[in-house]
Length: 409
Ligand code: SAH
Ligand code: SF4
Image (tube, rainbow, N blue to C red):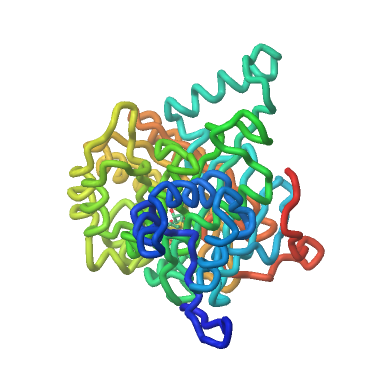
């Protein structure tokens, strides 16, 4: 993955700074004979200031920046190389890593993907705040906006869910912590978002992250969690992050022990093992009962729910009988259901359920006292919706632009 670069007649390995933890940076500065506060300054420049070149780290002396460069250090921030914009405002980015591999990241202004509209207390509070802003009653002295970024965790995916386009890629490699957090930094820079301050285009608390892009985060667990920790320094509170897993048991058990962790969404997608096996072969390794047992080990915080995602596939898992089975499965867990109407992909043997069926399915679950929400599809026209991420340039050419390095929102 590392690149070699010719540097004063020597070949040195290029090493990204973005992605290093504060402990890593302290170690680096020690090795370079620098005082520890230099590590803090560099940490701030990387994650708070979100510098886009090492030259911008002006709190460090020129000599120190030169030393870092001579040692092969580069900033190593992933780069947006292509953008597609949907009629609904969603933007899908093709983001390139240092070795040329690419992933997709999605920006959903005023959108959710897992948070808003999900019935959580946070979403309800946001509704009230928003109406106050509309009525001009908000104390906020800055533009009051919200956005959700959908982040990828791997290049491709190994899990092979039959209804998902990302699965068609197979797995190419894991992303590093810097590459996961770097997608967020690149997108925030593009939209001129200043976190942790009241300047800029977005309120500090208004950026939500969903780890629901390409890949299975819990098959890249250590890097994923390291990225979460970096992101909290930007700062984005972990309470504004949701990670979705297809049900990787060891990952869920490790996740349960993490002191700082996002909220959890689990892609259940079927009401019994037989159906789940046919659409998610991973069920043969860990069945639904084992999955629910693992989820039960997670110590839920106040006002925290587990979200069960359920992709509705017409004629496969969308009958009222399936709804009843689903209710029986989840009623032992403090949970809510996020219904996702299947987003079509080419040559896939599924079809969208009729809208009346979707509404009836939701109603049945709600009647059992379990909150159920229908996820609004975002960016379908540019293949940015759930399960459509495939490093694609299949969107109509007119929607694709080669991204300028930065534009304001
Ligand atoms: N790999 C993780 C996170 C990424 S997928 C996981 O599977 O949970 C995010 C969500 O999109 C999952 O709930 C998945 O079931 C759903 N999904 C995948 N393909 C889809 C499709 N074609 N239409 C609708 N939802 C889909
Ligand atoms: Fe991977 Fe999630 Fe797609 Fe399944 S739904 S193949 S786990 S990205």
